[in-house]
Image (cartoon, rainbow, N blue to C red):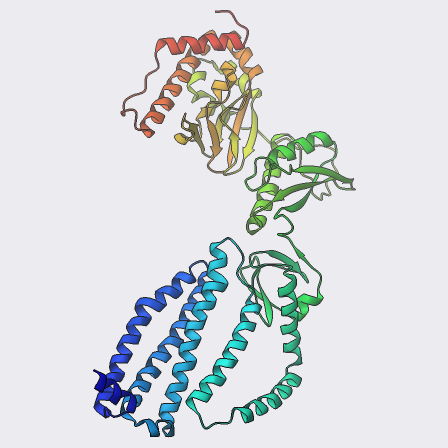
Length: 527
């Protein structure tokens, strides 16, 4: 073994042995690349964006692959060429240069990725600034290149090379003034750190999410999913707004105009209540509404609300504006729009009595009513619109309204004792809900949400008071329906939790009697 190593160092193994050693070195280096280095780079880059991760893995793997082939060529020539004549062979010198440069580059990039990106992210800190990493790389790679040239070409004059490099640097500096301006501006931004990757900024009319700030430019991803490249010199000279600082809260403002005659306090209360139900709008700080002006066409109001999810800002603002229309509509407040109507009257939409009578006849608890009773009841109906995904009421809230679905669909969810919500029903046109809270005075026992845009016919407690006083049998039927629905919901919750078996839901007479007693009590009637 000692004799083999001595012959290898001296270059006396010959061409065939050198070829065999070269192939063996290539196989071992490729196996090391596939089993160790590539998985290590993927691990260290796992917290980076997908595009950056793939680019880093591809770049480091390629450099180590080149180093593997150059290393195999170097080992073969090292074993076959005598020591005294190795550096007289150009192929040997080039192979040695590639081994040192490519191998050292790949290993150094792994170290920079681990200590500059992965470890800070693992500790919950931002990665080291790319400009600092690039500065460090520049010095290391320059020193490495000089050392590699000296090793591969021992007869070359490094001093002459440095002198030539200095002259070339002056020429390049004069030719690349703009690029150098961007580089120094990027260095200044890196020191001040006015923004970090992931922050949303507004600069020169461009709004975007900071993806990266490198030597030359700052890259933003705008809301159209387009990449915007801003030169660092422009960023350093411009006035820009960082929407994510100082505490991550961002105030949104949306204006809306309503017709004259609407009470400002009522408009404010309706809009604030609406914003409190929009997902993404913070409850603290609380949303607010300000009266701006009484213009020639409308009374203008400004809705102000706070968010933290800037990625969803456009969606949240859209939900606020959409919710404003529906809430104002349900509260009989009209959104203003430019109009040239000179008639001082308001059109009343034609009602369709037959359609409404058909819906009322299909309601189980109203079947004992005669045509005259249904007509009186239809006169008390009011129509409300709800948007898809909008919560009509929540479990635990108080309510005095009974709903009949004219169009659309509504889901009914019940929250169990464990806090989990279960879908117990999907209601369609002609179905009704909300009768429990209205008739018994109990809080809402479920959460109802519009599965699509809905038009609901609504009756209040006063209308039912007149109905029950003139039709006592209706109260009995109502109590039976309520008891049956309650039993069905409880059974479905038990099935979802694994505590019950599928069987027909039944309402006992005791439950029906208790509900009937509550109905008479809430409406002030005697049994």
